[in-house]
Length: 125
Image (cartoon, rainbow, N blue to C red):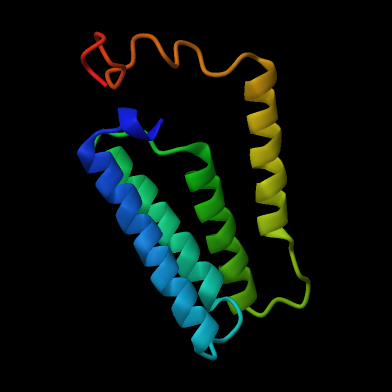
């Protein structure tokens, strides 16, 4: 939950959304070659995940898989392959399966207990 995140983690996430929105605006207005929009978007997501990990925060599965899916899809387009490999679609399916498996298994173990971001008392919200 967002209110359990540290200020540093929220700052990284806000910067990530800001960069993605700026990039989306550039992509909409500029005539970029195929592959560049996805490659840059994937790079932004992966750099955000790496920054969160380096700062000691947890980066979500969607951030890693989405970033990797966008990056690989964009690079595939930039290489101009004759065969279109639906990498991003595959990444979406994999993330969906992992999220569904996590939900059916009851979520992450101890996701609310023993977490350093969990409030410790009634006055710590």
